[in-house]
Length: 83
Image (cartoon, rainbow, N blue to C red):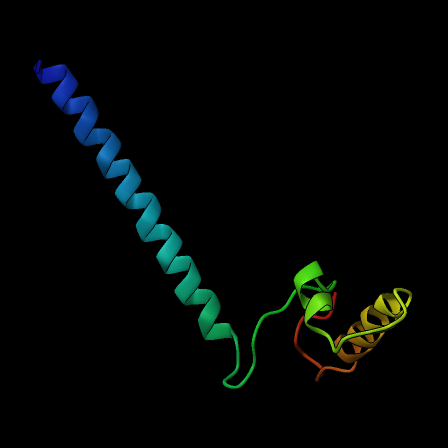
């Protein structure tokens, strides 16, 4: 392997390691912003979240669950970055 190839390989590995380090640092910084006992959830319920709701007989009830979910998000405590 030529010196240039070794250099390029090491440079790419270092860049990848830096990306991983920055990603972990970002996740840790965000975690510090989340109060104990709270979790981060999407603004709109995902398909999996809606499917986890109690069994429903009427397919139209899906929108009811989504409406309830949005109402609960709207009622969250103030100062939590409401969109």
